[in-house]
Length: 289
Image (cartoon, rainbow, N blue to C red):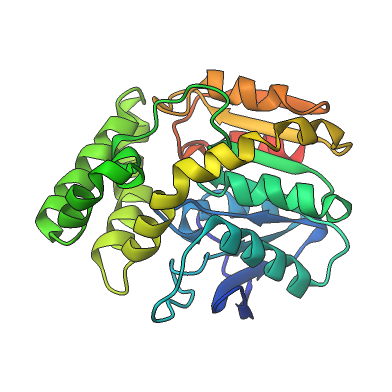
């Protein structure tokens, strides 16, 4: 199923620049789909039509520094900034409530938005993503490299060498797909895998935003661990939809994430880290249930 062409494009003022946004018409609290730091809103191209076919309003946007959003000179890319960008998008929509959908490194933005503005959240959807350091996780090696202060010189050297960076990117993608069925691996390489490669290797690149955010990643996880007791106060439904084939953010991570909410449902599905592209029909079914 291809991405529907009926959407309104907007450039919404965010924390430090304009945010490229697509608004697909429909009913109900809009699903606000967030991407992680190796990609952009295109990771939802397979999922959006499944949701709009059910009559739901859907919004996707690029965080500052990614996709078609602004990349201001000297921009500081932070997780707090991403939270502010999400808030700016929801405010611009003019809706009373929404359904934040977090994936990968947008876990903090999605969950912390719900903490800051619970009255604006109809429900919360969490796909394979990070949030805290309460539970042991083997983070992807590429993220660990750029997140570890003692490896900053090595990380910088690789980031500034397109050949080395390209090799690392390809190697990391292969590691992510190692446990997936061959048909999912092939589909990934021609869709999300190419999208991620273009996001880093083509200009304007999402590389600077990734490097900065990754450098803040471990501190962000530690900071969010302090918020875990507050998550029990959420009265709205929380859907933790998790790809079983993710070798890093495993189903055990998803189970732990769900345990911190009083009204959460964990739905393990036969997909990888980018399950919204691997099995969009199954992900949409859970989101719409």
